[in-house]
Image (cartoon, rainbow, N blue to C red; front, side, top):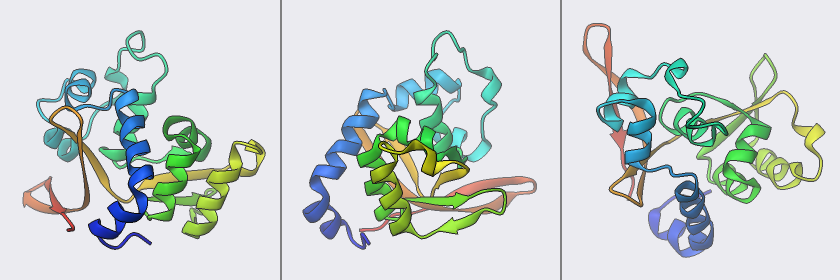
Length: 173
């Protein structure tokens, strides 16, 4: 498991670079996310949510950027095969190993061991039938900031006004 930023950088520099490159290739930037969602800020989007129906399908026909927003900012799940398509098998494998992503199976939402899920991600591109009925969700929020910078946070929510919640971010060093 990835337990500190020093360990993470020293042993996973290539995977982190691959993740960063994939996110940038899909235009997962603050500007693109705000343009897509028409939210005033990424924090507002994270705190208040977003109506998926407001997406202009002509501007985003593949939905890859949309799915990144759903996964990392809106705390929604994606079908495992779709997550592999969006992130790529190697990046998905890395995020599962580090427990940044979690998998569950079927309507009972049975949790899948992170190492088993990582193994499945590594093999699914060879056998897509093995991943049916598996869903994936993020344990972190992955914030696009200042062009090509990404910040990963573990989040909880605190009520600050009746009926509204404010995200409380936990940064680890």
